[in-house]
Length: 192
Image 1 (tube, rainbow, N blue to C red):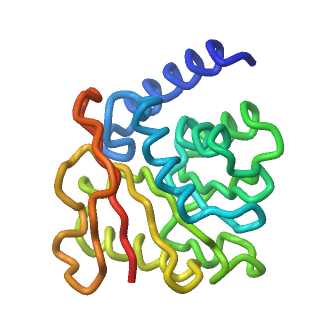
Image 2 (cartoon, rainbow, N blue to C red):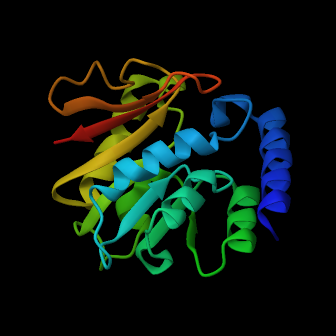
């Protein structure tokens, strides 16, 4: 598939999945190319070739493709997605990508033991702002459990405020903003 075919296919898939479960996806369309590139560039500040990178809530792979186009090696990238149909699309549209179908709240059981606590960055597009606070915290704790010390979680959201502003024990900072995105998008960093 070429880029135009992929974009059409992912938009159609996203829309169909949104009709079935809008709260799971959190938005009407996949992340924009501009916002995905902002997030990928932020993730790259934590990446060196050979360092594992884990993306949670990979969806149709727009952010995944941005990570790869910015220089993340496909063999270093593991993506986790809850939706089976989206996992199938990821496997079909991005050759050699390690795709795991599962709930990111169980991240340390889903990724291979050899990369646990060695991951350089976890990048998330999970719509945390639509989840109850305990589930948000569980997802982020699961991500922290596989990170090496001092590594960060990069999170994409459409809310200018942190979706974890209730959790004062972690470091949180807005790393980037795409105000002219529709809707405006934001990239947050979280660190223990």
